[in-house]
Length: 196
Ligand code: SF4
Image (cartoon, rainbow, N blue to C red):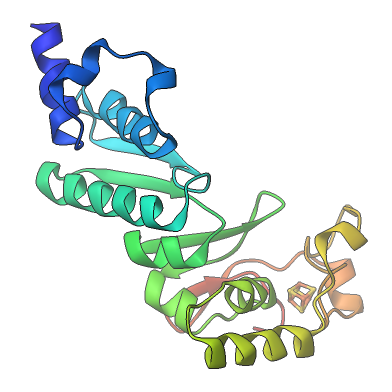
């Protein structure tokens, strides 16, 4: 029964049933990711935590695995907690997004509100750093990113107290060092910034 279930699940994620007898080295990276999806789903969970599930894959394989995840979600009524650093991947799959910096929530809300109209300087920098396949728009984003004046993560060290992003933030003031901003509602999002 277990073998029949495994074969059926392999088939569902786009692999042949005979793959059940192969060794890991006989699969490509994309196929191994499909197997990871099959392993996660075979116990019929309601919630799946996907931690950087597609970040190691090339773009075309990434698209195939994302489509598979979306189909399985709709077919089985699954929920995903999808952890990623790539905003375009998040936009494709998520309904709600929480933006973290050093483990703290900077902004959260419906994915369209957060990614199309980001209110927190860190979210704005993330969106501006996300590549798009249209050269003119990409150039615009690069200019915007440079004009924002956000410092790179490697140029600063963590300092306790205040806003966790203040060492990198071009808008930081004395208030940002003295007081950690609480999450408050701005439009459709919740934002942790004194000046959002
Ligand atoms: S609270 Fe201050 S340092 Fe933090 S993101 Fe807002 S402006 Fe920048």
